[in-house]
Length: 391
Image (cartoon, rainbow, N blue to C red; front, side, top):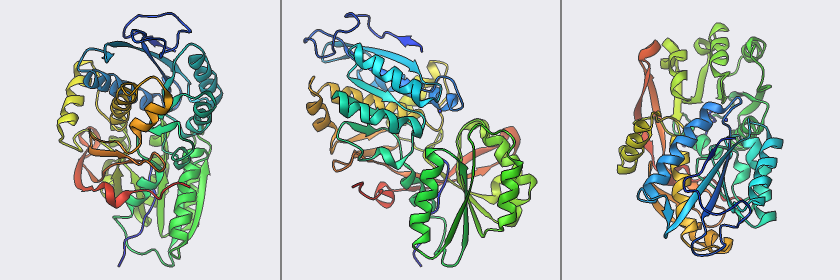
């Protein structure tokens, strides 16, 4: 019997790496001019923890990709970090400000709702945009100027599909947040499982809501056969407590993505009653670059977690693209179809739509409380979780 996809969850400071040039001087202003990179990410706001993981990974990746020189072909790199606080309006303003001061590579975008607002600016201003941890499928294939350094929702769904059989006749309920990430998951589960005979419904909560009991009650009242949780941010703990209090973890099957380290104790004994998929966790892969990233991040006082590889990969892409030339077309051509060694193993940027093809993971959470930790069950090859080509 063919296994069928489910859904899962899976957020301004300035760092002048080398202080060269003046504001407004374009990165392509000469062979000695700096390469200016702008990072617009969530340093504060509901996804600040995710943003910090990305930042730590990016700095580790930049150190690795430049061999510790912080230069690309002898040109210094200047990186400016700007906080979007999880607000698309702030993100768009920050991106425009960075473009206006000569930053022709923009990266970051912790939140899906921000990524879809920034992506059009890349095409309009003829610059390169490398989205970060934002999982929305809408980023893939949106335009020639936009790439991504993390996974996307479709890959989550296909990974979750490795756990389950045909859902024909099942009542499926998606519990998610009322934002781009949550809506993407609802749409994807509806497209995939609905086509296979499941009755898909959803319960959506505003991202800022802290009292999640009413939403857990809605899930309980629906009496679904399967609950798919797509959740991100600091309210995850409250969400899981609400589900447990309503007895949902005991009454039905729950599938979700493994979240960040601070969330592990929240599951407690419930961890054994949940099927987990994972984009990444500390120890998921044992590649040379995984060890390099971990060593670099920890030496800087950080911790490897869910979205640290997204920053590391973004830095690899920045250096590779900038090394191809100053023209954005040269940089796009360099990235399209590029296969390279990443933290998770071999990664490929699909030329047709810029999806980042990568392995994913099945995980079990073992232990309780502060001792709870993930253990790898299986690595799912990239070819098994390739998203559909965006049109």
